Length: 332
Image (cartoon, rainbow, N blue to C red; front, side):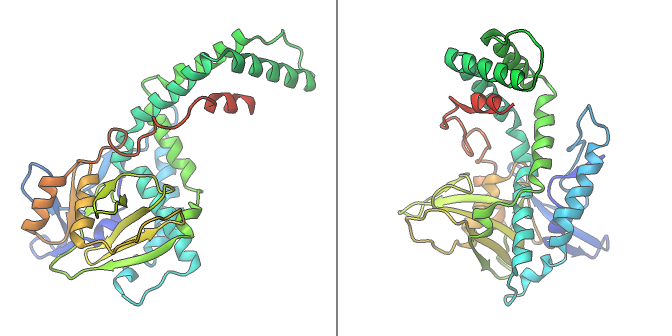
């Protein structure tokens, strides 16, 4: 099954009517390649087995169906309305759009490429736990008390038993199939998630003219922090201070969302070039829009693919992992 990494309906927003084929087409921009005029919204971001899991042959179809019914279809009903400068999201539409943006981030190929990095972080958290004798003994005592209270007849649980159990969990994380399993499982878990700071933030729109269009990357959700000197730092979490979230929804309209977080700097209206530079930087392989433009091609050639999840953006190593596995096992 060939699944979409970016919804087909969103890509259609950036397509043009091709008189030769009589169908919608996209201009595709990629670093190191000349602009290509004949990309189809139906296939431009379609990947075979993208949501597939070896142990569950039906999960890809179920995931596609849930994404369509619960996330994409509600937004598709008003997606074209963003082109109207008078259009304002109501509370229900804002909630639907918040879920949509969260899933756009989670399902993109740039995020998928970081799955191995995330598994390494998880394995590191288990390493920290296995090196802590106090935590091993505490979990052993906790499990033993729970077994007694639940009238389970079993041998005394020792720190060694806990360590062996933790090692089995760690080893599963390091299995070859674990990256894909974790990616799909994480995606499914986000379907019902509502990002409250984003939902409660300030939702703005940036507009441009048809001759200076926005582009849409295959990693369409851009985050940045603007410093005092105006420079942008790409790839920060949506709950970090001063974060701004951007999503082009058509060649002439881009959502500019200011999540409800601590802010210490004045927010400026992003320029079209800044938005397109961000889209190009986040792109895993390509960007799309409805016209050929030397300016856009220059941006993609200069900025394309410079943001890499888990390498120079959305880094996790700075967090404290001393108690992550301990807290998890204490709840089991």
